[in-house]
Every structure is written in structure tokens, then in C-alpha cells.
Amino acid sequence: MMINTNREPSALLNRIIFRSVQPTDIPRCHQIESASYPEDEAASKSMLQYRQHHGALFFRCAFLVGDIGSPGTGSPGGTTSTSSSISYQGRSVNLGATLRGTIIGFICSTRCKSLTAEAMKVHDASGKILAIHSVVVQEQYRNCGVAGAMLQDYVSAMERLNNKGSLKVKMGKIALMAKKNLLAFYVKNGFMAMGVSPVVHGKEQWFELERKFASSEGSDAKTLECYIVDSFADVEKQGSGNPAAVVLLNGPPGAEQSNNEPMSKSNDSDTDNSLDGMDEDKIDKVQDRGVEWMATVAKEFNQSETAFVWPLPHKKTLDNGCLCPHENNAPSPAYAIRYYTRTGVEVDLCGHATLAAASVLFHPKKIEDPKQNHKIAFFAKNDDLQMELLVPPANSQPTTPISTSNKASRIAMKFPWKNVTPLSPEEDSREEVLNMMSRAFSGTATSGQASRFRQSPSSFTQHVLHIGTTDGKEDLLIELTEEGFDLLRGVKVDYGALSAWQGYSRGVIVCCCASTPKAESTQPPTPSIDFQSRFFGPKVGIDEDPVTGSAHCSLGPYFGDKLGKTVVVGRQESDRGGLVECILKPDEGRVCIVGTAVMTVSGQLSISI
Image 1 (cartoon, helix red, strand yellow):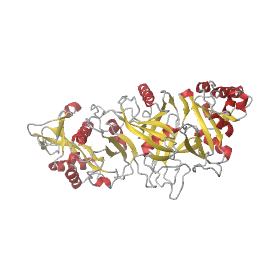
Image 2: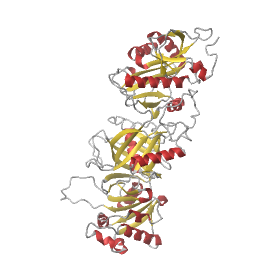
Image 3: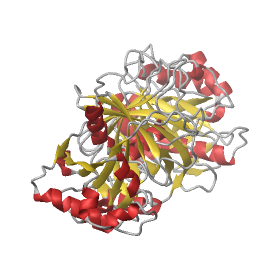
Image 4: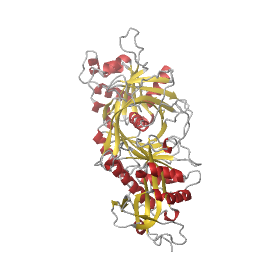
């Protein structure tokens, strides 16, 4: 008689208890390990003994209660007693008698400080990472929900141990490596896919996944990581740059299974290759309630933009060449990204929020080794964006500054090239724009010179050098003389008036060429500035943006052509101010936008999806 007389998942799971692995269980665990993994991937018996001896708290199994040693099963029996750490149907239990049965699966882990092959060879009790080595189920019990139930029990047991146990050093996260066909299984069980692993183990490619531990016993299991980052900051000036909020998700918000809560135990497939709504065609799509949720969260943060990011583990990324000379050309981890303003309006692209999101994803990585691959790819609604963490070569001085603080990152972003199409002097729309600008800047003047803008459209017109719209008529660009640009500083702006002209959909860019600093200047040295700009976006709920990275998709090419340069640096003038470097790549139709990001806030978001 076979052990599994009823293959109904619920009937099988009702006969399973979960407990710690004992030394006498190692032969049985090794039998399952050897039968489940290729020879070059399976752990040896001595290695399993080492893990149980040094990390017994982190070695648990699924024990099937029932007849043992039945003919034809090939499964040795075993017992479990009150001496074992046991849980049944999610509850800790105290058995009054010894039960007989057999181990049908197990999970073993050790602690380490980094997810590398060398670090995972030994157990380091002070390591903040709990690295899972094996999640394995005997073949005849697969596709019955055993692995999912075992993993849920394991995570719960580790959470209890981390919060209530006697660990001297608390753990920060559970991490593991999995093959491509198992990514959906782990994502559904609360893990976040982090990208391709550099670790070589066997012949196949592996992917890294992780799941954060709750920070305290009473923490909300539905929290999400969130951050505020100052993008395009001048690190010599505190409070500079453009703040953006960043929210990290496990998958598209509003999907059938909420991304910020554990999956149901009703999952009865251990290797679901259909991805159940998480495949490449669906993983970057957001349902209506997800859109509403992102708008709500963006309003709560009340930043100019909030970026929402989730991994795309199956997305293939094409690297058109490094921005910096790195030797590692491994595929870049891919993420979906969406942007919302403080009024809950979605925008297609936002440079400073993209920079902020990249800095959050880059932040945990070690950047001392210049041979590492420091690249990720974002897939926005209409654009594919390549990001790279810049590691300056020895004895070099970057064009834009970077702090040595571990909270600051200098990042290059490949954005789409956007041309500026001029409005001809004969067009009525040009006159409409001039009238709009005169009305918008006819408010209270704080200087005598600035009051000239209040007199007539002609006094404004004399300072206008160029009027044009960017691709898709997204932005209106107006180049002024440097004198005219300086005069605007002293005028109170009527932001509502800037919405009058219907020939653009997003914002108004006012800019000018920057003169060379005088040699006798007593000001501290700053990077050479090629142009200055301001950005107004009342149509998308932003009166004046502190620093607008996406505007430099057109500002960079415009001033690069005007000045005959392939690298230009702009300073966006606002109360906060910031620096943006533009490296022009016309052959690729891309602009590499470089800026410094400084993380200022990190925390947990508790607004349920």
C-alpha cells in the first residue's frame, strides 16, 4: 500500500506536521537531497550534518504522519516526539505521544553576511542574512502544495525566532537562489526577485530572491519599504536637489494576489510555470485598483513625484554599452517603474524619481569593486531606461560632485533623446506664448529691474531668443538672454496663467546659456555650468519643480547643439537648486543624464493595496 492513498492536497496537508531536523534525520534528508538535485548541485551528507550541527534552529522538515516502511515506497520511517519543535496547521503544538511517519521534505539555511559562494559555505551566527540552501520535497509529493505550506511554516518559524528567540544578533532578511522556473513560486510566497546571481553553482543560471524580516514583534506584516531621496543634489549644499518618494513592491499593485501580504496556502503547485498573471506579458500591467492605490499613496507622500517599482524577473535587457568601463557585462536586473505626482496624476517619465528609485536599489550593494556590474534597467510606460552606478576611476574628478557618504550615489541614466521644434515667428501660437508669459510674470516685483516685465509684452519679448516645443509637444521651451533669465528671479509667478496655452501637455522650461564665472569671484569653486533652467508644471500639479531630470532629455541636446559640446552641465535654479550633467549620444538617440542622489528617509508604508 502506498503512503499517499489520497492525493487531494487538503487531505495530504492535514497529515503533515513541521518540526526541527534532528541529527538522526540527516540520512533521510540526504536521501531526498540526492534524489532531487543534480550531482553537481546536491549537498553532501557531511555538509547537511554541518548545517544541522551549527544551524539547527534554521533546519526544518515536513513530517508526514502515517504508516511507515510500506512496500514499494522506498521511504524509511521515523518518529517525532515532544522533544521536537513542532507546528501543525500554522500553530505550535505539544504532542502527548510519539508519532510515526516519514520526512517528505525539508528546508535548511545558514547565516552569512553576503550572498556569495564563499560566505555561504560556513555558518556565521552574526550574519544578518539567513541564506536558504535547500527547499526540497520528495518527488511523489510534489505539486500537492507541500512546498508552499513548508515554506510558509518556515518563514513563520523564523519570524518567531527572530522576534521572540534568544538570538544575539537579529536577522535582517531571508535570501536564496533559484532557477528561472521557480521564480513565480517564490514571488507568490512573499519573496522579491533581485536579479541574476553572480554565483556559479552547477550548469544552470540562478536568480537571487529575498524577503525582509519584520523589524519587531508587533510589526505589520503588510508593510512595504519606502524612501525619500534628494535627486540631483549638490552635496556641498544641504537640502538641495529634488525630493522624490520611492515605494518597493513585489509585483504590480492591484494584482489578484496583493503584493504586500503573504500568499494563501491554497497554492497547490510547487513549480507553476504558467506564472498565473505574473508572466512577461502581464507582470508590468497595473489593474484599476492598483492605479487608485498608487495615486492615494502619492498624495500621502505629497512629494512632486512618487516612484513605484517592482521586479520583472523574466524581462530580457539589452545593454548597448556601459557608461563606465566595467568588465562585467552580465544582464541587468529589470524593474517596472510608474510615476505619480502629489495630486495623484500619473506621468509617463520623471527623471529625478527614476534617479531616486535607482539609488534605493543600488544602495545595499558594495561599490568598492569597479569590476562589479552596477546596472539595472527600468521599464516605464513608454520608455526603456538604463541605469548605472558610477564608480570614478582612481585620481579622477567627476564633473558633478559626489559625497563619500554611503547615503549618496552618483548615477547615470540613459534617457530618450528629445528634440525641440521651433515655433516660427509667423505663427499665432508664438504671440499667444509671449502674452501668456507676460501675464504669468507680471506679479509683484522684488526689484526695480524685475518690474519691467509688468509693463508690456514687448519688454519680455526683447529677451526671448527661442521658443519651441519638445517631441510630442510635451514641454514648451523658452530660451532667454541671461539678463532676462536673471530678471525673472525677482518676479512672483502666476502659475495658473502658465496653463493658458494649449500647445503643450506637461511643463514650461525657461532657460539660458550660463556665462563663464569671473576669475576674481570669491565664491567657492563649483562645476562649470553651461546653462541654467527653471521648470513649471501647473498642468500636472507642480507649480515649480526643484530639479527636473526628464526636462534635460531636451535641454541637453538643445544646448549641446548650440554650444557644440557632447557633454553639458546644467544648474536648475529654484529654492533648492541642483546639478544635472548631460552626456549626449546622438547615434543612439539617447541622453545620459548624470546626477547625485542622497537618501534622507527610509521607513515602512502601511497603506494596504
